[in-house]
Image 1 (cartoon, rainbow, N blue to C red):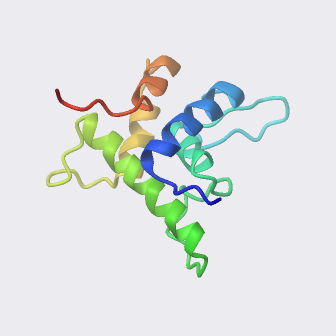
Image 2 (cartoon, rainbow, N blue to C red):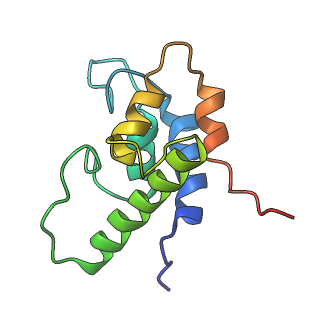
Length: 125
């Protein structure tokens, strides 16, 4: 049975990545020995089942429909989160990826804030 990947299926997986591996600022992922962690964007990519650093790159040329579906769902989630945090797609020159990278790296940001943006979007009652 194949699971359809959507922003809502990525959210809990990305949060689990951060809880398991840790969160960091200033880089997509850690690579020094003994240090672990990743940023929000990398956690979203891993939560979507994409290879490491895939979202840090330009859209790869890929013929695999499953890969493209995961890529698109991850980008849709980044857009949803950036917009919910105040990114105005009409005025902002930064893509959602870069906007979230800057937001992740803001001095004083906490892992609790990062995890909170991965909570499922609340429906307006």
